[in-house]
Length: 164
Image 1: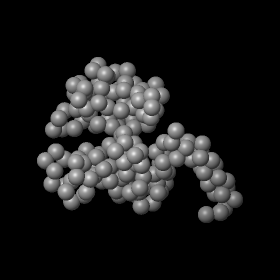
Image 2: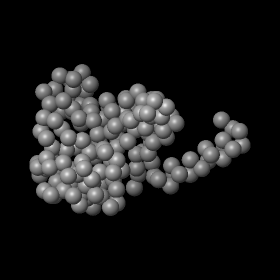
Image 3: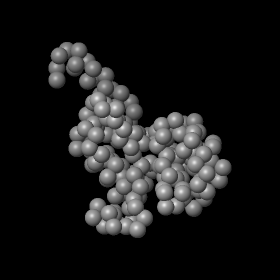
């Protein structure tokens, strides 16, 4: 299964991924129309910064899925078909238990509905994550974990040899 993985050293903190995510999850699917929607589109990726380092983070689709176990209404579910944790908006009661147990802080409350949203890997876009496509520096990649790890090892070797 592919994962959205980040190369923090390439992240500028521009938040293009956040904007693309919100637009992808808007009713209109276009930036200018999304701005005027009555219910503001909600991002599902968060770029955090400490001044020196920027890091984009979204749901890691944890295998132990603490959010699924904590969900009292059954709205958080592991989808056997896709291997992803999804939220059923109609079942969510807004208890925020999933928000409290998420070790990455990437489940967000929708203020207007008091329900939650999280990364769904852009299910409506045939699982082609908008955040990855929008990243100008390619800090985000949607790849197999082994492929990402291999490229990281290769980059380390290149750095050790003095190759840029």
